[in-house]
Amino acid sequence: MRVAIFLSAGIQHEASDLDVPALRMLISKLSEDFDITVYSTILRNRYTKSFKCGRATVRFVAALYNEQLPKRIVHFLRAFRKDHLKHPYDIAHGFWALPGGLAAVLAGKLFGLPTIVSLQGGEAARLPQIAYGNMRKQPLKGLTLWTCRNADILTCLTNFQLDQLRRYWVNGSSHRVVIVPFGVNKSFDVEKKRSMPVPPFHFLHVANLNMVKDQIMLLKTFQLIARQVECTLRIIGEDQMDGAIELLSQEMQITDRIEFLGYVPHEDLPTHYLWAHAILHTSSYEGQGVVIAEAAAARVLICGTRVGLISDLGESCTILVEVGDHVGLAEKVLALLENPEQLRTLRSNSYSWATKHNADWTASRFGELYGHMPLGNRVLRPRRNERLVSD
Image (cartoon, rainbow, N blue to C red; front, top):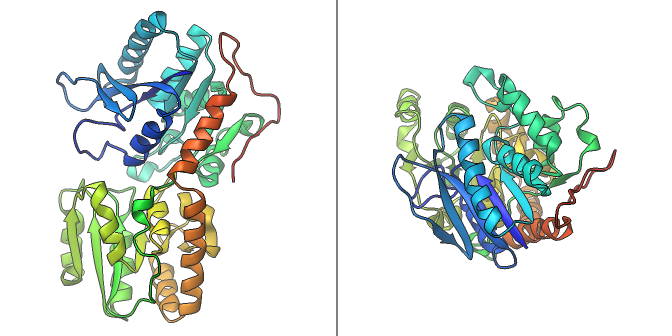
């Protein structure tokens, strides 16, 4: 079975915040059973050769990842058509609603193929205060919703993401929707048995420094915790705010307790999860937050805001508060550090989820979707009120 995958960045030759290791792993695993070609935009304005991701071929179209949407769509469809006429595809699959999902749906309509669209990030978000999310303005909102409605199958990373989408997509329940979070591989299962944390407590934050991840709340939370217990915060992620977070930590007089490590290669992250007692994740929005799955697999206590995977896992697996509630998060963390039995239960429950929903599980779910799609020119159409949801 031949599958065309469309995405904007996500897989790059060089290390970048636009490279998504979980997506790279998924495509590599799927390529063991399916003939996959990935169509991707380029990161910089220069010629980029094709390369292999597992057995999949990654082809770069002649458009930058941040160019105007119509130009990216044209280049996607032009490259797809050329290959499809030589060796027809069976499925068109787009990651991110725009441009990947839109390109997949258009390719499906033009060439009579079944289509899958996989939401990844801020498609359902509306955060005008930080200029984030497809739902905050037209035409992004209209194009995103049209793409979701016209895909034969829509996948979301979490129930949280789907619930956010349904605020704007009233008839979403009539569509075929599958919840498929990204699982992680065994490299994050770094220690078979973790002891109870003792001072100094080690807190970890893994995310690029930007407004969506809300490291301002992170520092406010950590400052309150640091007033009560001996602790250290290690921040990993590319700085996209020109040093503003490190400057704020100086003004808050907590710099001596914080390590800013910047970008760390994904394969080196397990060492940092082994060091950590708890992860602090204070995002304003997440489709999932793969770092939460990584922390769960590493038996690290998960503490953060009620978004993405933290929202789905809930109080049985995590410590969670509403977005922006740094006081509440600090109070809950401090209380839990004095309750080893509850801490042990939360870590155990999240680890159980991670072992069940690992990278192999994610690939198998997409493989099942591919395997149940009809071949040829007969396009699958959702039946009214039908919805598929994985656990």
